[in-house]
Amino acid sequence: MKLKLFITALLMVLFFTTCDTDPSPFPYKKVDFTIYPNDVMYYRLNTYGGYEYFTGGISGIVVFRLDEWTFKAYDRSCSYDWEDIDSWIWMHPNGIMLIDSLCGSTYNVLDGTVISGPARWPLREYYTRYDGMQLRIYN
Image (cartoon, rainbow, N blue to C red; front, side, top):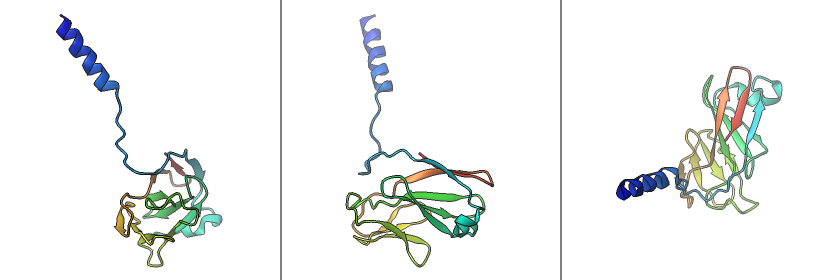
């Protein structure tokens, strides 16, 4: 009987204990805002491959339009030097990768993974939900 009680207690502890599975160095910042990509103010988001920069997150947010219904949103903090105020993620002129202005790390715009540079972790990605009119960016 004591063994059953012990095993049950142990399983409950293991079940309710959470592990930090995100080895990323970024601190958590709440993000939750809505934009209207069809508005002329966001004209760059009206085309596939278009992008816009927004405030929020750690160092701002870049939103990229992949296709008619898919948007990607990443924090503009480099995973290598995110604490440096001079470090910003920018869209590379080729339009298919993002680059850090300070360390030169490059990231894939489709999933935020590191392509090259000293960065080891992918960019912090935010969820997006698009209903044809409104685009919500959140975590």
